[in-house]
Amino acid sequence: MPVARMSPSDRRDAIVQATLTVAMRKGFGSTTVRDVAAELGCSSGLIHHYFESMDEVLAAAFDQSAGRDLAATEAAMAEQSGPLAQLGAFFASYARGDQDWAFQLWLDAWAEAARRPALGSTSRRLNIGWQQLLERTIVDGVHVGTFACDDPRAAAWRILSLLDGLALQTVAHGSVIDRQTAIEWSMTATERELGMQPGALTLRAVARPSLT
Amino acid sequence: MPVARMSPSDRRDAIVQATLTVAMRKGFGSTTVRDVAAELGCSSGLIHHYFESMDEVLAAAFDQSAGRDLAATEAAMAEQSGPLAQLGAFFASYARGDQDWAFQLWLDAWAEAARRPALGSTSRRLNIGWQQLLERTIVDGVHVGTFACDDPRAAAWRILSLLDGLALQTVAHGSVIDRQTAIEWSMTATERELGMQPGALTLRAVARPSLT
DNA sequence: CGATCTGTTGGACAAGCGCGCAACAGCACT
DNA sequence: AGTGCTGTTGCGCGCTTGTCCAACAGATCG
Image 1 (cartoon, chains in turn purple, green, brown, orange):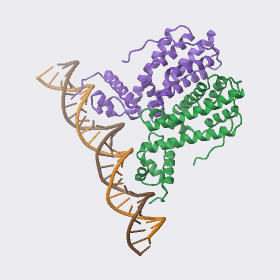
Image 2: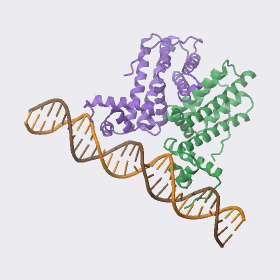
Image 3: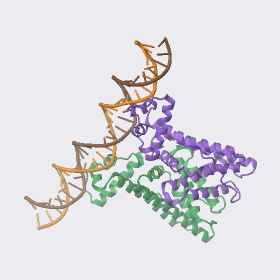
Image 4: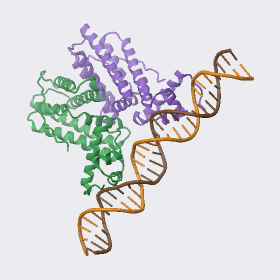
């Protein structure tokens, strides 16, 4: 039962998409070539015709998923004017309710980073991307006078890491902390981190990007 | 080449110990029955004579490793007098240089929590244990007047999550942040979180527990 | 001393893994 | 119509995995 012929770039995208579908069900660690092939309805050999190794497939899939989230957040922030509103958009992008499976991919990526070089460098690059996004906003806010912060790099890492650490609990341990609480607690700490008045930071609605 | 005969409980401990030795070299995810058997110098069949499945072996090993760290930290804090010194001991236990492999186990546990019920409930229980330890110290400090905090539960989760989030970067992504910096940044945020003067919080030396 | 109990062996087993390769099939171009 | 070109197949290689089990051996006891 042959599968429809595709152009190389379309086929590559299809493989990446199928990998994500499988990975969000089974996790990166136990997503196999045969799983992806079965999801796509093609043979396992085809995957290796487009990717050097399974590691590359997983890295490409994670890159697409997490990269899209980063770009969407960046775009949502760009629509806001002023560092305070931009920070509000940043937290709103975390607050979206459909992201549990996406964050599970982060957990998988962090755990596998030490053993899968391509996946490791991808998650590293994207993590730094998030930190840079925050740091730029903080620097802007300090210039304008909205924020007070003498080490934007450290502050950005702290805000991001707190958010990651709390989100980790919500996803890995279920009902210990709920997502809503994690966001609120992060925002409280961020207000303190950047020398703002309590309650100064509020969520800014973000358009829901399509999942395709 | 037969191995020495042991009592059931001794043998069980030896298996758990050997599992940790292997896991700290190869990581949790790729520790196999044969690895453990080779480390122990026994046959692979012996492992299954004591454990229902490999999952049980890994869960028991994680419980022992992470549980021991928690107990050691608890003991080190108990040796200090006063919440401030106890908090210093808490951070000192994170600052020990030999813990990268132990934290990798946490990454594996968090990632697998959603798919492996036994491992998930173990990591959940231990994570809550760490948070409780912090929360108790904070409550004590508020009573004494050393700390100012109107939501000890939230503060404890924030401090722990920040520490986890930063440590995650040092372990998963290598040189993005070094351990020393992660500790310092966490302590700075903790001082702010608990209404202390900058620099009030200092590391308290903790006796290095033996690895056996 | 022989019987018994049980900790231990070592390999068999099926299943699953990433990966490579010769052959096939459908499209574009002459 | 014929001829490349290339997306795609399907299988097999070598290896690793968790699990199981009949047989072995060393301690204990009547």
